[in-house]
Image 1 (tube, rainbow, N blue to C red):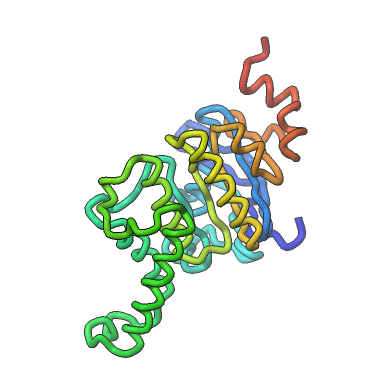
Image 2 (image 1 turned 90 degrees about the vertical axis):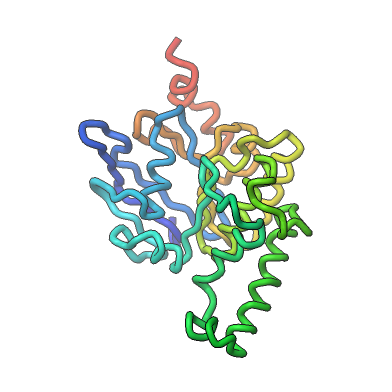
Length: 254
């Protein structure tokens, strides 16, 4: 793909004698949703962890807008525009919903520690802009007026929404969503799909891992399928769903 925002090149990951990912390459461009599917243990979240800097690859490279980022720590990748949500929720449970989202804005503010201590005009301006941005993000994910509630008090589905708002607060160019529909009702999943599509339409590159095949088929522009760490199929959702190798991976050869 020409002009890919995120590119994974010939990625391999081993943990001791265990091969988690083997020679996987993929690309996602601006205004595109690429979904990664596969059975449990196929290597999907491992790829997310390599892209975001939690794991280092055994071989291969990750490029963001054509520049290698494989050696960068997670916080540096976040500053460059890589953001994610997690399969298992990673909120600050004793902070409010608004505070959880505000945390992700600090990498985009300008005032710094001295400005915060002295309460300079620049700091106050940053704070007003951050408050407005946090309110808009919570509104966008369906949590209007709930910024003052403790994160731990929200039901599971709403906590997933907070994670999404927090990821968006970092102003990413590529967004990695790990099981965003988990724990959601059908109606909530439909709302999530509409939100993901709207983010794609604004030009965001989205990499999605999701077990809800209905969600994957409804929102994806392309789908890649992993099995035992290897890429076994890639293409439009309808074509991937009919692929014999994909059917065998999910249902067994019989």
